[in-house]
Image (cartoon, rainbow, N blue to C red; front, side):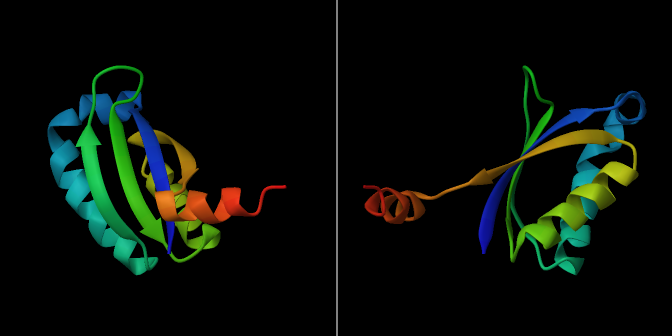
Length: 97
């Protein structure tokens, strides 16, 4: 599985319906399952981003399909980051010259 961090900001529509955000998060977790994606954590944040999500996907296509499906609902805009664990980084730097 590949780990991703998804940074999200509410759209105008998302802010108007912010009271529904926890319910939408639950629906997102269910949606993710249909793509074979596991949502590890969803947190609401102050600052530059409104929501930060950590998920594990079987591949980039699954992560992208989920992200596009979420964005199509119109409540958030996202930026997705590929994340690496300490074990991943140990392997990566082990290949350095």
